[in-house]
Image (cartoon, rainbow, N blue to C red; front, side):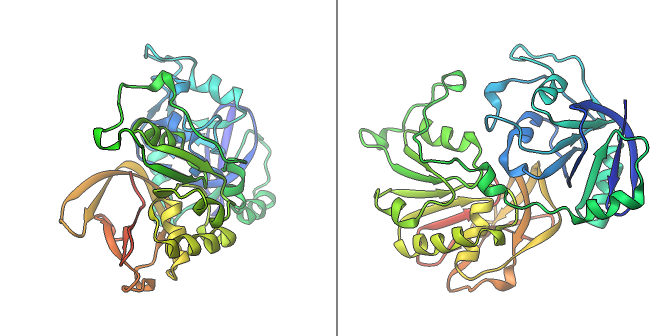
Length: 348
């Protein structure tokens, strides 16, 4: 079945439908990773977005549900050059196409994804529509596409009540708590703004006593549990939309509890301390982004997934200083907070 990707600038790309047959309007982004399509599909940070995979063949190792970053996919659609109908992987449970059908996620293949990526790099991230309607009217659909906005996604992806995560035995690899954390593990409060499952799993496997809290949890509730540290998770959407969360983070900042934040959490802490954020032209999404440590000068290859960045000229250097930069475009990838035990980053 033919399918069409219509961008808000009027560009129309023709391909073939796979996965669910469904019309969707979404923000079109691209990811340069060669693998990890299941983790991308199920990462809550992609809520409200359709992901273009630049690697030309997707689906060749199938689906292993133990690797999912949440209980369901969150991205709106997937755009690929070619879908592999045959999976070679002893852990494979089903094909990518069957998985997307099961979860009502549409896809389009046969697209020159690298050409599409060049369009997005040159013109910036755009909204788009995926449709199987052969008779679409461009003049009618373009206003609808341009009106689309990613909103309300933190509340949608966050847990609804606090819980204690347990180790997923299917992915347990024999890591044990480090000796210095025995017999009393560190008590960690994880604020869920759309957290990937692997974050809580990693903390638990390292021996931490973890409690995951919903996005709208009051600072007083968290501090009343006397955590050794607080982790602010990743998540989707525009950080400036999270006004109430920012107010609670101001209180956490003043508490002097150790805080580590990633991605959306990094941006929210910056906003809570008076800095500003802005939307990037096309964002950083991939597994090969170099970042430089401002203290040591060392460069690390990182995995990134963010479309917003902290504006360096908005920083009060008495509050926070850059800890990491992206080597490619010199944007801030991490902050160290002056006089506080707080570190925030936008990468893994």
